[in-house]
Image 1 (cartoon, rainbow, N blue to C red):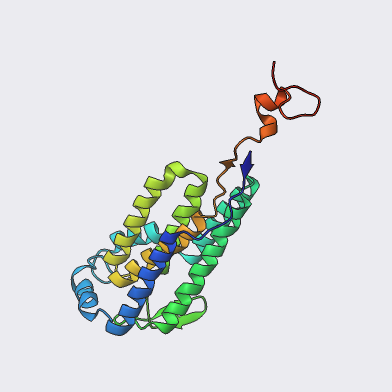
Image 2: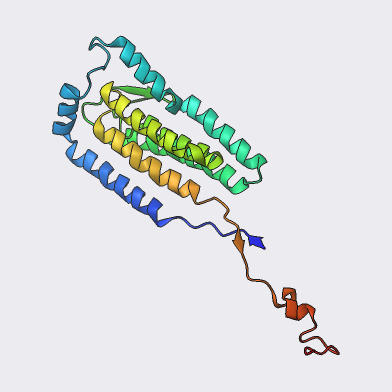
Length: 226
């Protein structure tokens, strides 16, 4: 018979979280100015103003599902489908992870100073920091929520996440440490949400269900031998 296993936060989620925290401290403390300067000079060939508008538009289209509104709709749709399939713990886990991602993004952009990031606007707020990349974070959550429904899509969506990271770098949308921060935070939240999956476990048969028990073993007035 199957039984629901109590939720336990995976150790991997703690490791991803710790890696993100270390990176956040380093960004605040050292600002990675050399790396950011190198990225701006050499790794943004299709950024606006560099003469490749069509490639820039294509890259923005690729990353667009990771925008707040689009990603919220995708996560909500996945949650509804999971709920209708009776997977209610998972259906709640992904929206909770999404809400935590939005909160984490806003708090980090308010508190952590990412140099050379420009001015950002979102959620009705103005930020002077771009750490971490919310698009990258949400792309990973989209991948996790969709593959909870269709596991066969995981390689395709993982490839999309990799392309999103490249596009955000080439367009100058985010700095390398922003993207890495989004990956680490996204993996932490996605790993935690995936652990909500209810895995049926088969408990050992009770003595009363064994053939010998059905033959009368241990029952008053019935001999256990033939």
